[in-house]
Image (cartoon, rainbow, N blue to C red):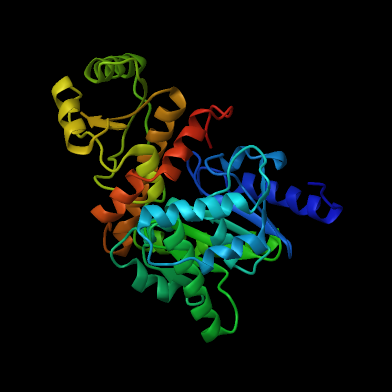
Length: 368
């Protein structure tokens, strides 16, 4: 598809935004997505591609008129059937596919009137969204924001958000520019990159002040063990797993003991193996969950495990991110984990497995 000069400039700005909000302060691994829209076309980051590494030729162009058909779908379909239909409709709406498939949250971006939309998962935000009292305190801290209770990603989230935004607009006469998604993350919309930056700065500054008033550090002490300790831990894990898995080793923090957000489940699993890695312990974990752990923690060590170093590093990064989220949630009454039903939906969803697959094949070996 040939680009007009105005569209090309929008894409340049979108890539710049993506790189800024692809930093570890906002997303980990292949999480988060960004978009820019014209009257006819929505350009969105492809699923699973790290925001920090996305290029203009990877962006996916979507026909907005065709995308709107999703909201005419039957809404009471079984989850799997509904997700499959959404996937087909999004695929049919693709004008040019870049180097990947569009995010499952593409309709969410189209529902917002703002030209630029940035969806991220900052730990500073998720300390609030993954907490017991987050919704109540959010209403005091961010009076103009929209809070959405947890909804499964995909069709349910996109439809729920559209309804919530319409309700907000009836009351306020405009759409929200800040949306907090429980156990998920942050959505910011603006007409210009400058507006997007200003909104993010206000959100983050407000939360940092709140955490500091509560006496909480906004960092965790992620330490690097000695080479001997790391090597010994990796050998134990490989022996216990019965395969030559990749291992990344850290120390100095306590990883979360349950599922916090979809990204934490995708890249680090819902639960760690919280014991010394023995063949018996790994087998027991497999029997309980149906798959291998990606985080193993014992004796002060936290180890990310994966098929390759990218996957292992992503698991460890998400464990550290989860540790910070859990630490910050204390300011909002403590951690609220995802329900078993929500957890199982993510664990069995093909779209999330696809994101992990894209990350493994990414040329950006450092993740984001």
